[in-house]
Image 1 (cartoon, rainbow, N blue to C red):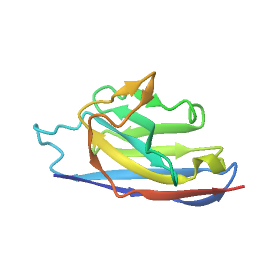
Image 2 (image 1 turned 90 degrees about the horizontal axis):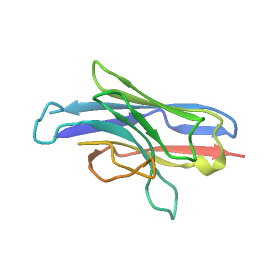
Image 3 (image 1 turned 180 degrees about the vertical axis):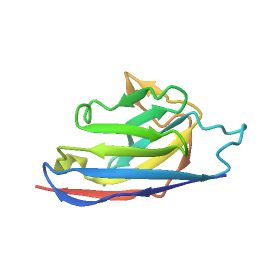
Length: 131
């Protein structure tokens, strides 16, 4: 089993920045549920959980939702697979609970990350942007 622990959420004003971190622990080397992709998803009140950004652990290829391109950057520390999400120029529309996820591959639809194949999830961290 793999655990994902998020941190870095909080409240900032529009135009501000936040950096989220996700630290994986547990049996990350399990070949049955090998982790080939990690990323961030978010869920705003009353809305579906949506993909924000994902990164392939094999070649560090990244995928972003159109709504965050140019503002958010996902990165990964190779030595322990800690994943970061640098969020800049935040707007109230970015307010949501942000979840870290890990799975067997970075699935995308029309270039944007989707939940398919993500089988480990963190508990989430709240991000609130005020206008």
